[in-house]
Amino acid sequence: MANILLGGNPVHTTGELPQTGTTAPDFTLVKGDLSTVSLSDFKGSKLILNIFPSVDTGTCAASVRKFNEKASSLENTKVLCISRDLPFAQNRFCGAEGLSNVITLSDFKDGSFGNSYGLNIIDGPLAGLNSRAVVVINEEGNITYTEQVADIKDEPNYDNALAAL
View (cartoon, helix red, strand yellow):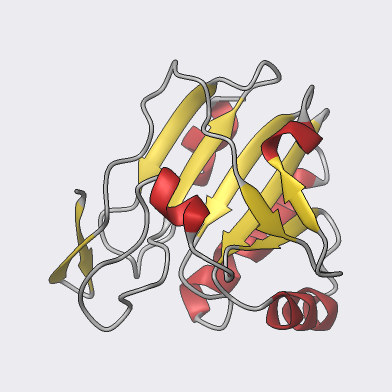
């Protein structure tokens, strides 16, 4: 269980992020058109998983904007922005912001992504949502970088994530 903070107050997750050097756990998430996608659908691409509680908060929105900006210059790399928001909210946000370099995916159906990656928050006011984290996966499906952001209100370390590509 990860011990993280929400505005300085302790909260906990269901587990720990997978370790670097291991094979990324498979997942099934919901796209904006309500179809499903799995990790294998991205085989051969580098992936940045930008994981956060909700796109309707300032820090989460900032991370989607920042990775959208960075993604435009990355080769063979896809940025997956993952939350438990409904796909409709994710589409609304990206449409209103004009963001087209990231792929929003939802874990709303059963939280299985958050469980397999150890990210479901189990207590505090955001219980049931995913914590803020970044996971980088190489073309072979191996994890090359993880960051469990210590305080949910803080942004991830973009430079370290991008350097792991």
